Image 1: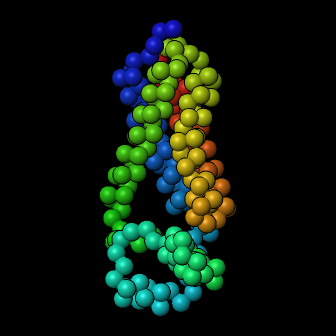
Image 2 (image 1 turned 90 degrees about the vertical axis):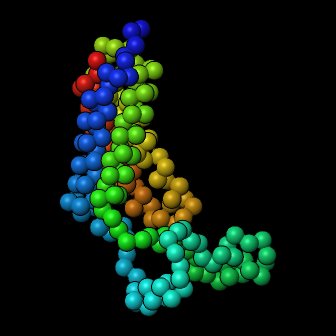
Image 3 (image 1 turned 90 degrees about the horizontal axis):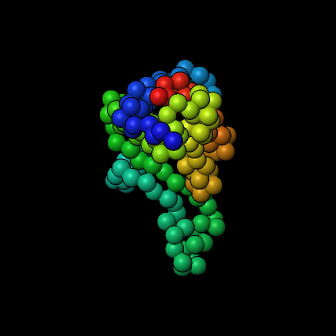
Length: 182
């Protein structure tokens, strides 16, 4: 088996990252399927004022904190509800976030290339490369999303839509690698 050089995969790594970056833009900003993922909080101003006055900083929070306690009296708060989690973010910096997202896509494409490098010979046909590396990319873009519904209460419909996005990203990535496989 003639092994492919990892360096020879620079073009499919870069091109698949760029294509997925733009596909994600289309999925989140153009298509309507993610519009219902997040609901508006009734009386949002009161909640925002309460968060501001509490001095809550950037971070991940779970409430009631008693959820993590072994004390029965404290856990009663959890029984009474509501139970939730919250992420508090700083002011958005779209340029920085988009840059990090592109680096994330490059990282996935690099790891997909690495798996191809160690498992697929040079000259392998398009369909085989597409199936193997598309599956790897699909798992990379989707598998970690499912526990957010299992453990953190994200809606299954939101998670399913993101998994479908990940399937599209995986298909695009597999297609690029299959097309440009040495």
